Image 1 (cartoon, rainbow, N blue to C red):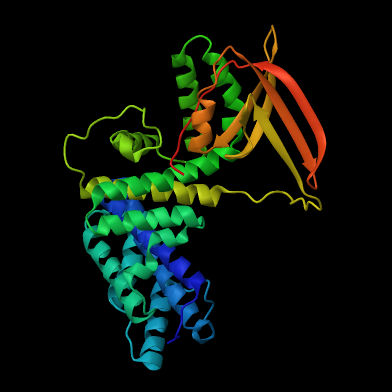
Image 2 (cartoon, helix red, strand yellow; image 1 turned 135 degrees about the vertical axis):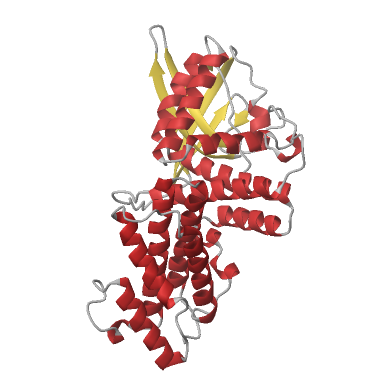
Amino acid sequence: MKDKIDNQTIRLLIRTKLLLHHAIEHALKKTEIDYLISFQGLDTVIENLLRQIISYLDFENKIKGDLDRLDLANLASQLNNLLISEFNLKLPYLSDIKLLRKTRNLIQHGLVNPGIELERFVKITKKCFSYCIVNIFKLSDIDLDDYLLINNVIVKNHLKKSKDFYLNKKYFASVVASRDAFENTWYEIIKSSEINHSSLSAIIEAKKDTKFYSEFFARIKNELILTKLNIDSKANELFEDYLNHIPHQYRADKMSIQTVMQREWNENDALFCYEFAFDFILKYQNAINEPLYRITQTFKNSSNYKYGNIEISKGSEGHLSYLYSDELKAHEMLLLYVNNSLKHRLEKLIPGKKYLLVSEGYLEKRLESLIKYSTILHNISFELGNK
């Protein structure tokens, strides 16, 4: 056996563990189509596990036949023989592994009711996976925590906190940590979302008539972003309902509407919120596209914006400016990501009042451009997170 397992193998095992959980979730739904999906999932878990063992133990050249085309029964038998000869270990549930593939094939052809043997095969697959993780890979469940798949360090730490709180039965704290993981990811999404950017002028203009129009447009915008990530809308509604029950002292927006929880926070609450947040974050992470190319900047440039007497550049993370017009006049919209201190200062600005906008551009710390013009503040609005 190897003394140390590499990170890539751990990531593959975590994904196999997630496949197992996915198969179990479908088994619990108790419909024929979910039973079929669950059987397919269990079969995939076993095959993935066997191939990961072969790769981890460098058995590729010791397997007879084409490794990519070997049927599962043959693959399992050869692996079992190698484990016995090399390490005096047996592959657990060998006959059941072979039977699982046969049963799956019969189910695919409509010859067997998938619900009859499913519960037994779920138990067998779980035990087989656990045995191999401990006795072959020398790992524990903690080594395969799903949050280890997340690349963003801040988000990963929030998920770890949520899992730790859950295991220590601090269910409300777990929900709050899941919320933090979700909202940090949502923040990253809206910063780069074309849907978000293109919708903002429409949302602002809608506020001229009534806030209900703008709230509806904002809701549609969020639904479109979630749809692109293939997030289940009903699950998202339930997650939002949980978040609306979080007391004000645990929110960035202290003035938002809160629903009082009429019972104690429980294990199911924490588990749902963690699993929803993790699924959302992983889907976003997997959906990120690499840019067509990267521009290497050989010089340092920066900008400084002031609106009225407020220096926007200090306390904000970048900004985007949009120009748009209606039948009567031109408008400019500034999109800013600000900290709470700057937010409180911006909240004191008065819609309808004139303010001077100053834009300074610097190249290698030298002032290269200076633009000043008078504006009338039409509207200012905030969407808060807990970053």
